[in-house]
Length: 96
Image (tube, rainbow, N blue to C red; front, side, top):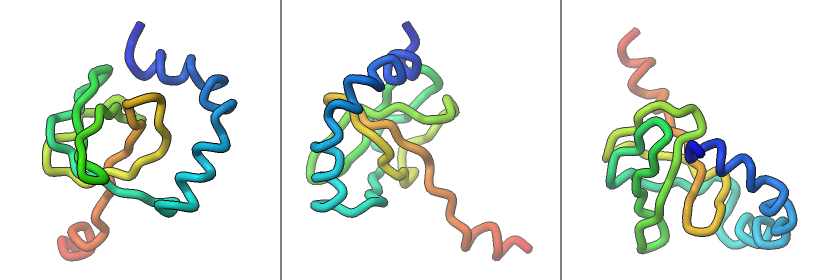
């Protein structure tokens, strides 16, 4: 089963763990960010560095996210984070 589909299939289990997620928001804030340290490929896990350790991560949109990219942490299932790349508005405005 593809990684992202498997992540979504576990949604009901994650909903039962809402208490943990709400505690994470209280402890770390809503928009935690991490750095990709091993490329995240479509339907493949990569690695991110967050909170002084590395974690598995998958992309929300099934696009490649290269190492060195800053990502936003959206959800977690076990030791795997669901992430999306953070778009830097300063680079797009400077090109105009």
